[in-house]
Length: 142
Image (tube, helix red, strand yellow):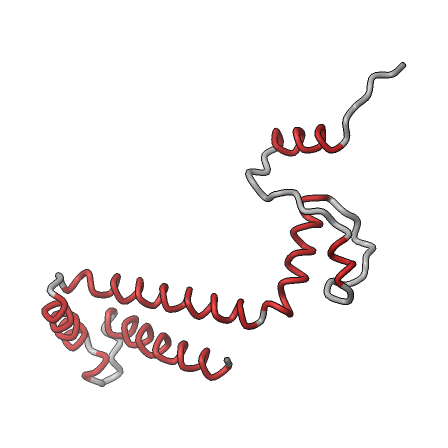
C-alpha cells in the first residue's frame, strides 16, 4: 500500500510543481519551466483532446481528484480493521452522548455493541429533541 501511495503522489507533486512554476514563469533558466513551454504543452493537450487549452488544467485536476478518491477508498477498505472501530465509537459518542470513561475501542467487540446507534440523519436540534422524547417518554405525575 505504501508503494501505491508513493506511485500516486509522485506524479501529483511533479505535475503541480511544474504547473505552478511554469504558470508564473519561475523558470530558473530552464526552458522546461518557462511560460512559453507551459502554453505550448496545454495547446498541444487541448488540440489532442479537442478542448480549449484553458480547460486542460481543470480536467487534469478533476482526474487527480478522482484518482485520489479511488486511492483513499482503497486505503480505507484495506485499513478498516484499524480505523473503523474507533470511528464507530466516536460517532456513537458524538450522537448518543455517552461518557468518555470506557475502554479504548477495538479491545472487545462488546465495547462497541453496548452502544446503540441513532441513525445519523439531519441532527438538528428539532431532530435531537424528537429522538430524546421517543427514547425517554415523559409520564405525567400521578
